Image 1: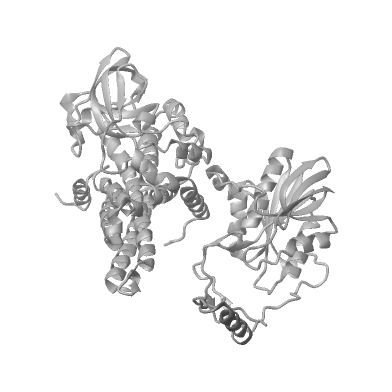
Image 2: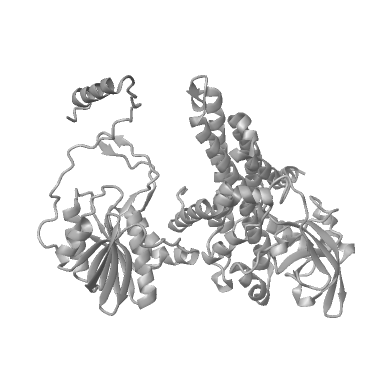
Length: 380
Length: 254
């Protein structure tokens, strides 16, 4: 057992905390209001070579581990969840599938510029009729000589407006069910491909959420990611890693809300004493601290298993599920501690609350995650 | 150009000081590179990138201080030396002696340090070290240009500015405003582990004379809690009388 961060992880944590507090936090409220994408933040992160963090040096990455990835996502989300999710999706949904399943040539062509921060990574999975039931994918790809012709649409795709290419799933053989789904790398400037970012969201206003429309989009056969028919298996593996990112986001948002609530409780005086002297408030804060610590440990454990090359499906699901649900409670109680002030934008905790809700939905709803865990523990 | 940076690991400036049986407790405390020394590291990296050469960062301190050196290596320094203080009571005199013993064995064109450490705030180690080495020193610098064997330096003199030309080798101490220290880049962090770290003890060094401290700390205490102020009322004449009486009898400053 070893509960210390390594020297590198500790340094990465220091750097990203300084960076988050110095470069990300100040604009977070304004971006939440205007929906402006934090492009400048990502340019600066690219300068620090953070955009390819866990990918091999050979492809422009830094070869850091998954725990370091979780640390970066947590620290960004602690001050601005929109920045956190953009980064998490860039790495774990955009870069990871190409890194895991791409050929050397595909990695050179698509992973290297992504890792250098020249564009943001995205992943096209969800469709209007295929949410939790990704087997219901309707986007189709039909072979035509050396090319594939893709038709269909995707929804709720993070980062696609800032991606030069992305992996997306399409049905290549309807008769084979989930074994007939294949992943393709599609350049976003391909003819017939359009990206529309006009959702009105509850939170995460500064993250880029898009619809993709494919009308007779042609890609060469070499753009198949990995093996034809493996798309379904691939995205299950991708989502396992993504869930570590969402879990880390939840820990970060909760940590941010908790710190604000604690500071407020120590200052706000009612009935002649600070809120932090009332046991009712103390217990809320104690529960917050406890839940955050437990969730962080589980996120780190899932990340550690991944770094060891071991199976981590169950742990990633547990980490994401526990962290996102506790995050929602922590943000709820952070508002409660702030009273009427907490309901106001000025005190920020309501932003954390709105941002947190997505984490119980994206990359596996709480219900789907309970299905995953049930399956992993042998229920049938 | 051979560049040496002397740095100290200090408490994070956001840490609360807690006393435990008369000593400052280090339990659960975050440590950082002394902020003034961080300016020195940044300036060294800029000099190295402009003129070429190598940066050696040196510290005297407990084992934990190694992580401050690693951070400097991650920022871009080339190698590091730590002299383990082995729990000895050291003061500015001792540290300057030890640093001198480390540095006189090496080639250097410029030595950089912080103007002072944020913990003890004495600002003595730099000047003492320059004296030990017999080289010129310029303290509280805010700008540094090197051309050939000459440095042109701007220094902060109590809010005014002085320009100094000095020949190398020279020791300078950094004042706030000299530069904006960079964040270590991720590849910098990943590479820092592989850069050389020389670990020495005081016994390994050929020290000129005795290093034991010339000063001792007799008492450590926190500043008294700030009490609420008092506003005097009434006629001006009465207020003045009361104030004088208070200054004499209560504050005992006259």
